[in-house]
Length: 242
Image (cartoon, rainbow, N blue to C red; front, top):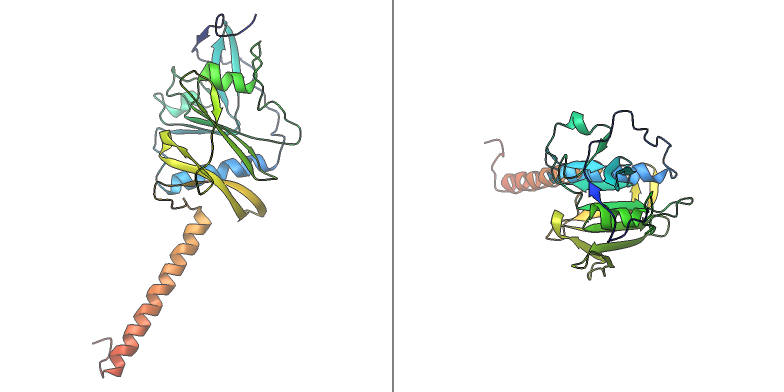
């Protein structure tokens, strides 16, 4: 059966416990690392509420024309779930169990070519599923080897439109009050292009190792300031301890 604007019916039902999920490993070694980096900086910046959900190769479900559909984006963000986390351990059904994701991301790999698939027939392509079934407002497609990022936003017609970056080559994700952009550097033995978050003031949301380095630098600066002050006091004949 065709699933187009005139014929498809979407309902939100819990995935049956006996539904067989795809458990094949991800097809690119970089995908889990890229996804974990996006989540970590949100958490450390206190931008990940307790009822929020980040999705990494984890099924988002809907029922399309009475057939279950499950797609697992490489990364996604759900602002709030309304059920205990134990109930979304295997998969997540928007509307039934919480909000629709505000953004989903696909990282292009050597073997996967379905990021742009708008196939409406069952099983639908990723593009069609995110745009028309889930109606996710933001869809990002990232090519990590070359550092190419495409961000699409759903317009009033219900279609994804390619966005242009700002002067800093970043994209504003209004639902998260954050900018998304590309950063080049090293993390966990991987050197290359990464997706990073920046806040409203343009400050980079740091990873744990970066925060630790920043704290060490601040402590060293404080030590140096204290030492300079002590030297000035001694020059005046005053012992700092006094």
